[in-house]
Image 1 (cartoon, rainbow, N blue to C red):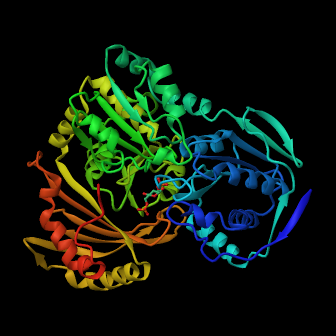
Image 2: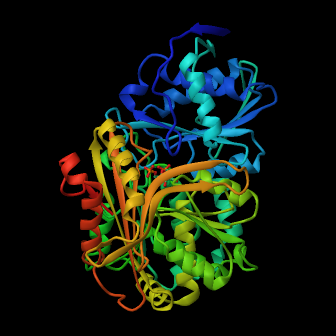
Length: 539
Ligand code: G16
């Protein structure tokens, strides 16, 4: 039944910040998935006795790609696949299943927060035995393999029925179809005090969770409505759809508009949250109140002792360099370890494995802990609900009291999308060469304390990674420039702005950052070079 099929390489299968992301139409080309998967299998090598986890966020083409992966894994001699029922599994749930079963790795088919459907995006995240995504050293090897691939192996068998949990034999390989929700729910019950959360909802507390027609719907219904007793209808857009019902499943103020409108209306619930396509990102809202992801990380870290799993203490905390410095002040206050890494959750994995950190988070709506090796959207929501249950305070009160204690980092990200790739690369190159000359210069009252590329030296494996450019000012303000690594075509220039105030706590972030935005534009020449005078997305 095993066939060896001749193929020709694709030259565009280099993974980005989190796996391979391409337009669905690109992935539909002949042998596109086959080439990519065979390259991974070749790099892993010696697949006998190996077990992998497979699932996805249910987007267009997941079902077809999963069947290909099953047939190729069997043909390549993989011992066992653990697959989510009907091919569904969120990214955090997948990380847990890998770790719990001591699997050798896993594949989550998702382009995360990118839109789905035939005209949307498709993606594959590849994790190793840690439950976290592979380091760049491994993805580089896989890319090299894709460039010279000549053939792939596949079993010539009919599609496999994934609709019922159970074990079956496929072409000499074992397949175990599992309920993807159960293990995840068990894990959350071991971290949080579910009885306290039940009491919160019994007291009349209301929430709205927007699953954005993506993978977290079934998890959220089970946890929030069924187990914790949130009123029926608290979870909306709960059925995963192949095109997310036309929604762009990116939980931010722009794309989670339905939830934002509701939470800023007279009928708002006490608490609002949304997750992204594959359930690793989260957005937190109070009544007419938005919590930036950077503040959310700082607030969760400050309140670790309220959660049973972290009561006895946490090792430390890490953030990506682009994320605001709010959590740094919390780490200093609690005298715990503090790290800044490049953008990409994979950079947190070594720090968690070596017990340097327990919590980590990013400005891109990701927060998580060492319970798994991915960011975790529902975990963040349960953490916020636990703080509310323990303190009896609202989201807004909790955040404002945090600012009173630590000061406030005004923080906004500006995305310039659809920029020509060569133009964006040249812009960043020119900017980098200009930065050393800026030291000591003053722009509209802001004096540059230092400026240059952000370089991370991993304390565990000694690898060195350059990611983004930072200008720091003497008052603590910062400008960070980066090219996104999660788009499926063209380039997105991200500009992250931060300004700290200890006393002015109730101002408008855009107003507070007006001057720094002008400085960021004039130094980088983004408007002149891209023709864009406004960002496409502001979050
Ligand atoms: C991925 C990574 C995150 C990263 C984000 C944004 O998230 O796992 O660590 O912050 O991409 O990356 P970029 O700024 O390069 O677009 P996800 O949720 O897309 O898998």
